[in-house]
Length: 174
View 1 (cartoon, rainbow, N blue to C red):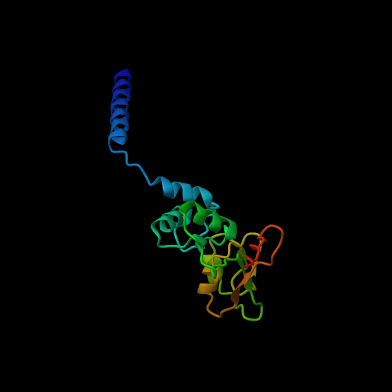
View 2: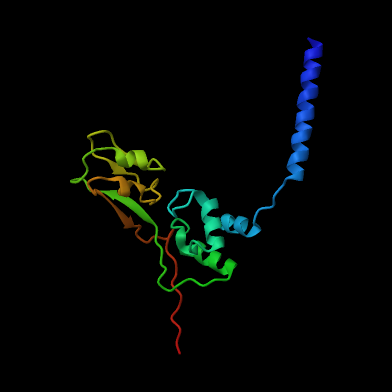
């Protein structure tokens, strides 16, 4: 019994040492700019940007395949901070606002396709029953609206409040 325990401990120690050495030898440095942009994003990993989480969005922003405004939960403040950090300017027409889903009662047939596709479990309802959306949990990812066969779900801009209002830039006089 003691021999088996000692031999297993020796084997596991040897394999652990080999894995540790291999991880040091084959270590690959990541792009530090991607890590910096990812730290600026809100870390919601909601998928509203169309990328797999905030890490995917950060990679796309850094390589230029996505605009800094691709993150609706981050809003204007995050988009401007990312643009400033990367040294790019935002286009004048790029105005993003957070959205939430709204289910129109008279069109909802209770098919539950929206519930199955909601990544944040913000929709409450059952089969052949009216569904509702919890505004606090909705991330505005639009996945439910895309899957709704009757078009009962529409995406509405969040009303401005103290939590999502951004002061516009002052007009420049010539």
